[in-house]
Image (cartoon, rainbow, N blue to C red):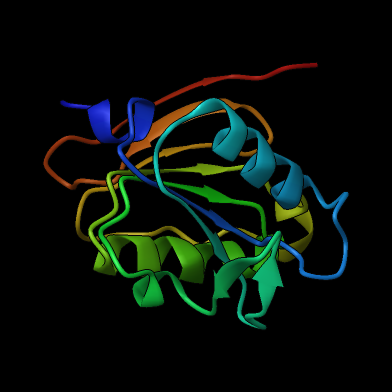
Length: 140
């Protein structure tokens, strides 16, 4: 198992940024990664627009280069579809920082491998069918 693309990415996309609210958590993450790492960081939101003069891509598949790691900061109801898009785009891994999963229920994903960390606990999961595992340590 190789987590390098998730833990040492050459590029990152932050899904859920806002062109309207600079204090949105996804915007803070976008700014911090851009300030601390000399790698491409892409903003993604279905509404598009600009953030700090940078283009906001409407989908992950619209990003002009392969993305190693994705930070998902979208509502829980959208996360499953976003993870499926990450798989289609062959992303190395995703970190989900969304909440509210108890309210929307849970769907299991399946298919191509994608390493995920998230959301209401410290969790890494490997979605490949031949290597299922999950480590979860809840924070109280």
